[in-house]
Length: 225
Image (cartoon, rainbow, N blue to C red; front, side, top):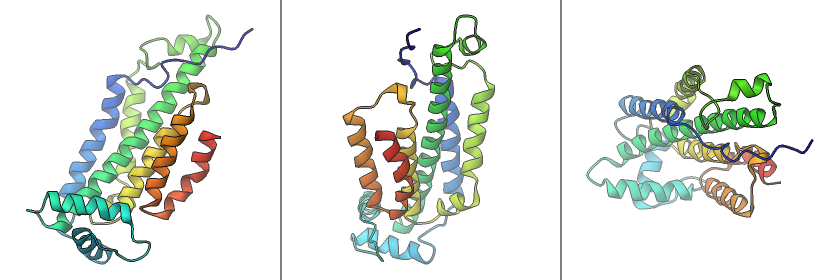
């Protein structure tokens, strides 16, 4: 029997699935802002706030991407305290990161469901289970579970702490979430040179912020191999 063709709608997500990703992420950002420091706070936050305002160079490795973004944000909102601007920015980066990881979870779940449906024989339970709207799932339960997983991630102590003061790690987390979301596609979805170049650019930008992003290098290489 010939192999089943790759699903053409595997990456499509229903509006309700997107809502299960976006709404908890926005709520997390609101909570982060409400619980964030009123200014640069202490330690590295003071150094980053002053360096971002002057487009200076903080301690090694210098974090050039964060400095350029921080410089733009603090000067666009020059009426506000630079430290406060960066704390709000940290919360936004963390919220974006958890949303992108939620997108990766949803995309993997939807595509796996779609592949299982396409490979199932007529009358197979998998085909009956996955019949429904284009995203392959019509039940409310998985979307509640997805929103709950995002909420659990958003309230982990380390992430919440770094979302409330000026620090470079939230930007790394957001870019890491983007890399994971870009890699969260089944091989049957197909990848070309454009996808590999785009992923390489994102990885390169992430390296301009913090070298800890190298932890995702095996995932990126496995994706484009």
